[in-house]
Length: 393
Image (cartoon, rainbow, N blue to C red):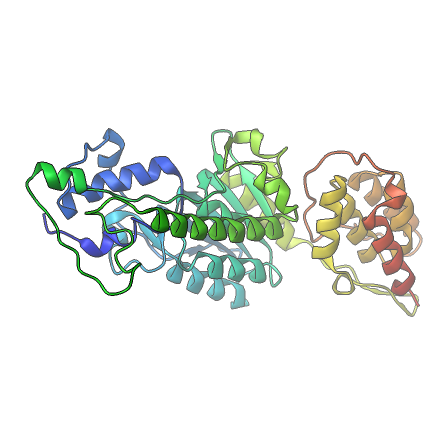
């Protein structure tokens, strides 16, 4: 088999956002291709996808974009043979879907154990920005670990199947020391270099303390970037993400820790996305007065505040009141921790004499727990009161 040393440079001595079990499989497959003898686990010989077509668009305008296999910056034409998925290709697809007026929403169909660091944070930013343009949902359609979870977390809503795995929010580095193997085979390498650190990570000599410290520093830096990005995407604190300790969560385990919003399959996520994109817009003109519309609300700020308070439906109630043209009702409803369904009924009754249109939210509610603090003192309440004072002239 032809050796492929350039693949080794993408695996060894570099931080990876990948589940450890997937890394073991990759190492086992790669070893014979670079002249190493490593026992291949049974999982390593499982067939990989033979081909991948461009993302599909449903007749009603939903783009379904797969995030599958091993994630890499650039696939160099190897994706069809090895199950790789390129960040460059994904970014092009996300941008195409976000800017195509015929596409109403995007569903990220995720089944991946992660992959390379290079290029992933740029792609994560693209997904996060794209959700400001149109609804983006994600479903862990089997696995969404490490780098794959970072990408899924950029969606407005994350679904987990009963057997789906999510999380593993950490970074891993592997260094291959073949010096003992060289000695056994009678090989002795002489490495000449200018610059004291030039030969760091050379596999034919033991890893030096300085080289270890260098790679650990980069590992921690990358982990900090990962934690920050996921915390932003999910509207959570960085400490909450760190406290997961890169653990893996399965099914409904992911919901209490904030890594998923709902249990559901690809079909149910697609159904909900269709419902979200089909909802009519409520007019913001009532009785000659201009009411506060959804663009006047910093939805992402309120979302983060609502999640930090643990009141799951707070953000939806804020927008329901805004869309109904009655933002001033939000503080009172939030103070009572009124449910979203009761809020809709209350607003419909309040508008019964003027407008019988059903009030619906364009932004999905977040999942959380009941707030332990006084709702009247929460940042959400204060934000709503400020918005209410500005909302109606």
